[in-house]
Length: 386
Image (tube, rainbow, N blue to C red; front, side):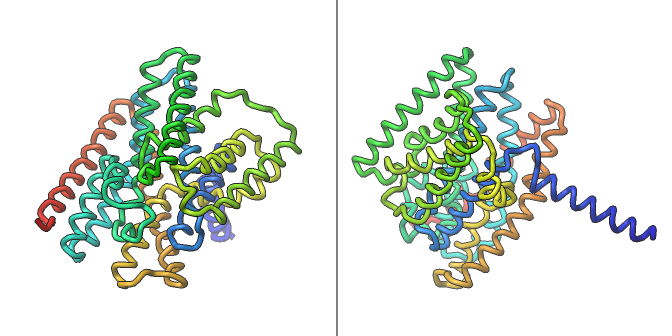
């Protein structure tokens, strides 16, 4: 009897832990579901199974703009060091562990020329300049991209660069109305630049922060624009249409619609509409089931592409079919481990620290990333064929 009660208590404890971690009531689970849809679409795109899955990155960008816009422009009083530390503890540990693990497991056996390129890409990723390196070296949709396990970090570099932009706005402009005007101005200028890149055929604009700032700004503008109060029926219709548009573009968009392209406005506006709608029946049915994947989406994004690249190197052919399915399953396992033992641990740790300890911890994380980046720069330089 006592043993049975102990087993039930342990079972209930684990159930509560899983419930709190993957089905948190303190978060908007429809937005977590959007994250899950985004990372799933990117994974399927990289697997070669979904031709328009690249728009998952655009979904992530709008969501990021929404949350960072609240942290930097709405939350009062704005605490710059708290904002910076939260971002660093959120992003750096998992990225550092992924690049360290892949570099340690891969660089010693690949060809010398490949080692040089992989190492330098990893170094740029650790200092959040991967998009700048990629724009001068490799087209994202070209076959050679499969040789770079850290190429996908270009989007993380964009995100960190946006953090710096929004931090500068928050520090330089104190009055809320002026901040709103600045954000709207950034949106207009970036959208204009993106359209210019599209009509001039600048395909490398895919990596460019100037071509992407309007997407981040669109998410932040949700806090600026008047918030509609639609009824339940209207909210369900708007949400349903927006989700249908997202799924439709994933299946029917081709690479010619990738940013820079005016067609990318469609999925971005769909994400904006979903966020602005209250959570009702359609969101609960269509998005909430994907919310656990959305909770771990950062780690999934980090690990899925290196897993595909490493599998291609090891097997010496482009993986597909059942093999690709096995690779993605392995990546999900690695992602779950990364989330539980790295990402979640550092976020919880950051929340418990005193401000001084938190600042020193953030500085240590930056130093660790910089140190590994210097090692990778050195490996690249000595491996380069002159």
